[in-house]
Length: 485
Image 1 (cartoon, rainbow, N blue to C red):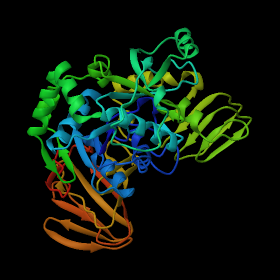
Image 2: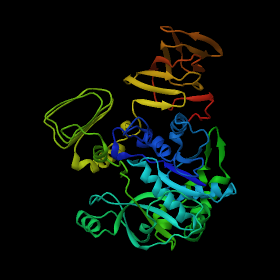
Image 3: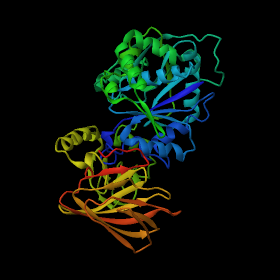
């Protein structure tokens, strides 16, 4: 059995302003109709003997992750919630411990949630080859056949060919087994001249961050090389608890866990490592340049998303989400518009977007954390206007969903129903509101909003008061298990 372990905890700062802390790139549909997370799971459907997936994510993203998994028909995924990020080695330890506790010794397929694979058939063939070697005790990583001297990736230098035994339990059309090689070394991101030498030699491959190994094998290696990580993860699981569709790791135990990548912790130290070459149109979509590379281009080599009008524009990426972008005379540029920010950059400078985000983070700008549209388990809210003493938001509540029973110490709220019907609880009294009807909630009064209908409920919320922050909330009851923090 192969258990997919999907790492969905990244923030994707190089894709700002589209990607934010509370809405990162793996939860977005950047290439087609499905999100990156959904595509990661969907491309495994033809993999032989694949089991229910395990998804490891930040607890702030848990409801969006669960909803996106449900949308593609997967109802039995295990979602582990990390209270803090601790890199990939602890994530692998958690997965191996979880599988071992079930009494199975399955093969773990560890893969990030935000990669693009153009050729799913070749990808599955490479995974099948990896499974054959993993079954025999090898720790497998996948090396991307480079097509350019990229300086943004780490590299793997291949060693001698590795032979497969004849006892594999996984039988399927696979990659050429003779191409599988031992790992000679991992190397850091090179400069341009070094990267050119790597590619010319034919010995170096991009490090994909995708791995396969038996749970027992990787756990034994981790106990030998990083026992402190294994110990901390054991405590985090033992003291954790189930919460609705999720499993919450114990915060204190997991915060005490050292942060390390699986490359440094295990793959660079093991004598059992091997690399499977992969040439399937892989891209980690780590920058706007990467999205230009994989995007569908017009006759002037432009990739265009949304409402865009151009005159004499070429070799550019233009992405509009809320407003019209009108561009004249651009060449080799990136222009990305959201409701609260606009990014303009030459294509060759997109790696510096992270430096911009660092500046904004130091200034404590909200634009690094969230969009004006804020996704919640019951639907979403979108800020329309804001000032010192008032805010106007549009709320959309899914059919059958309801907000928490709550109160606020510093703000009053006025709700006007635009579409659908609302059930309002106000200081113990319940009543229904139809379209064009409204309700007023004074400061400090317990209240709740529900959608009893079969279509989405849309309403306008006007907040007024001395403090309008999202942390002015006391939840008295919540079906989603959220605290009042």
